Image 1 (cartoon, one colour):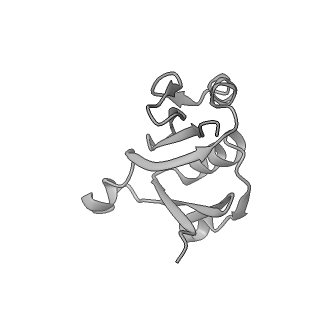
Image 2 (image 1 turned 90 degrees about the vertical axis):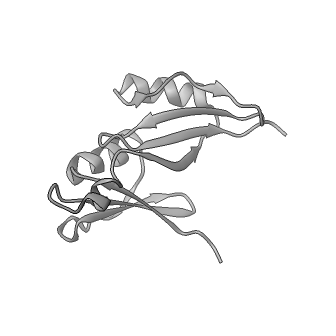
Length: 123
């Protein structure tokens, strides 16, 4: 068994698509906006960004603007943080060294979904 896809939920699909493709640099592999989602190449996984209507039920609305638990591996968190921050990407704070040896920086997409950049510890 392998994890192959992660989903993030948004209200503004075109705005989210610009964020993930233009700012984060993830290649768009399936524009499927007419079906309410877009698929991005995120390395060994696909990232599906899915539209939630403003009048969708409360349980669907609750999927937007939360900590996703998704992390993007980067070689140098500080440099990626500086690059993305200069492009206007919102971060919740500066990159921080973790007790397990890695460095994390938490960012937010336009819908308020939180993702992390992670620099793995040297081995």
